[in-house]
Length: 319
Ligand code: MTE
Image (tube, rainbow, N blue to C red; front, side, top):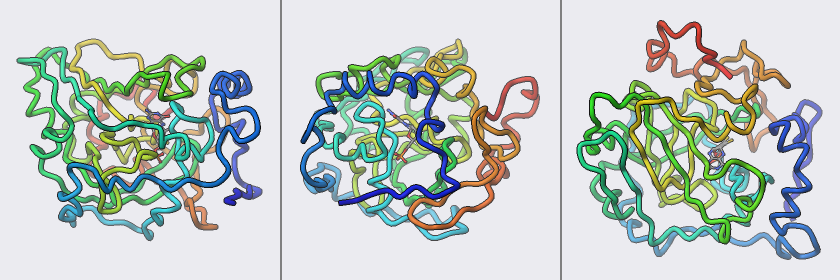
């Protein structure tokens, strides 16, 4: 049995979730059907390793050596069993419930301000894109971090493929909506999960559409079969299990902005000097270790992205 022992400096779970979540946690658990003996299952199920995934032969992809780390990779077992995936559970062990995620058939709609809206089968999309592996730091707003070997393709490639019109200012990402499959979606959040980037953020070299991790297709708990990862931003900007990508003119309201507007803003860049309203962002727990490290501005990726925010000083860029 895997038991998480809280350390003195860890943020109590109550503090690391939006106020509305903390207050309604019990209501959520009840709505999710997670109450009652055996609801979660007797043991720890195996994580799907996607052995039957139609794209399995594309992995491992060649590593892009431009992206290096200052710390060891988080072991796969640790990273894939410590997740945020509120569609399935508020618990960090959402990987168990996420086994119910059905990742095929899966289509991704591209619509909005594009030359021609389209709907792509996930396998066709993955096979059409140039896969590469990148080692990235991943910093959650809850003040924990991991180091991940993601596989995917630059979001910029997908933007080019979609041929957005000049009037497109933002890219909006939407997760599946299926309350039958995902018990969390029977709860009170503003489902489906929505995230968004400016066009400049989306076409930055770092923004990655992730299809795999640890040299394999993505495990369900990481947001299979397609998620976003923007390593200079807090983790919640990285929407999982995406079904729709829309190019729009008006800034979309995101899932976390709608859930906790005072705490989770649109920009959400990592800045250790700007505390979350309920805890410090100065340092981070490295998951799977007893280590805590100072957090870096833009999660250490300032050379790629700092310029994107020039002239936006009046915006709340860091929460
Ligand atoms: N995407 C969806 N659809 N649902 C979620 O609950 N959680 C976000 C983000 N993307 C979330 C999501 C948060 S808060 C974080 S920190 C990261 O996913 C966690 O990614 P990981 O579980 O792969 O570490």
